[in-house]
Image (cartoon, rainbow, N blue to C red; front, side, top):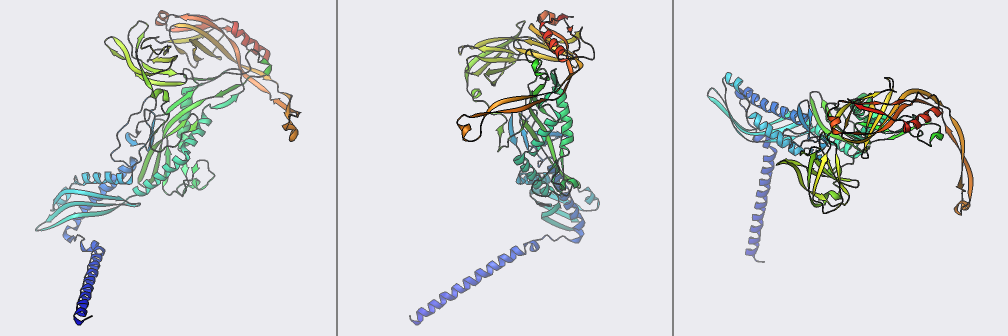
Length: 629
């Protein structure tokens, strides 16, 4: 390489070195700028404006805290999601009315039976809080400062940035602010604050509690326990008379029980002394010790759904076994019962510490005596049956009363054990019609129901039927009175049966009945207090069972005996009167009457088991006297 080439190489190396040094210097300067950004560009507030500017900042602090309180009190919302109403089928709207304010549910079941979640994200909370701060800071009053001689000229707020941290809320307000006093002025454009708040901590804990509820269904499991402790679900009572429960009374008992028991639920943590004991029934462990106070609440003034099967006219009835003809050999009577419930109610979960409280409600739902299943997103409490998704037959249904006057009615279609809602007939031009799509099902039933009328079924025997008229019978409320064979110490069960359906009344607790015209079979069972002692017995039952080992496998058996013990029993309520009668009620009788009076025979109070069996036999042959007035 020549001398000239060596000089060119050295020059290029020198230029490269200079560029590297310059790049390093630029990088150092940029790092220094970012490191010192907080101090280099920090607004310098002259001392004479310090009190005025502090007053302005206090407005930001106050509105930030007020907005945080609104978020806490409304489950993470300032602007609630779109309102969705409940229905008679499912009474839960999208919000729980709490002390006059709507608090959005984090989990609820809509009026049409769809399960929904509406949990706010932290980003959404920050966005709503930013909008709230912007609108409220723009309305801040500076009259006090003006009285002190200051001139305050706030400009428009360009935007508000919010970040919700665990123990505070960071706020950055971009607003030109001019403060003048005398001949001096100061201008500020960016204003940052850190406002002390538990919103972030509360929100994080609320999500943990909700996640634990979704995974364990602990609220539903407590609800099942309350249901089984305070309402008839499964069991057997020793009695020779039917067991009857008033569904409204059962509902009232459950409401009282839920108010007391829901309030007793706690989470493991230092805030509550008993919560440290893992063995406590009401204490749940969500995986960490909880420091803030946690409160679970249910109120009798909140909506509740309770359906129970079987029930008739508001009564839940279980019939005795052992008093029927041919069963007297059992030696005692017993009443087995099994009721199935759908039960739904809200629970408000509150997290509080000092003067802050975050709260959110959820709907607790027990489906057929069991805790509901968890969900992902939205789903239905009961999926729509496949039959109801295939409505392809056009049918016109008209509904009338017995005077052939058009009435509006709800129309359902029932095929075997599946029922589909079709719609409602509407009054138009002197008729009440529904032109709707129905599933195809030969020998299915069109069911018409209207308030104040008895439901009526119409069997569809052909797929070609497309114009159907249904006449509904009007219900008439009558006072019920039992005479002869009955006194105030007695109780009576009265059954009105018509067209394979029946209405049961427990008298005198219930003294009214709604009836329609038609042929009824009326039965009356009168019960009196008794003391029939059924002595216990012990017997031995022997059966052939396969022997153990190889002989049993090839059919060899051996005789084994078991003791069968029946304990002493006391029949405290027994049939002492009653009878049955077929009776036709005309509509004119029902229109012109206010009371139905039934006289039954008195068989006498049984004193031994044979008397009890005889009384049941007399029920089948004894008649009733029935009159209306």
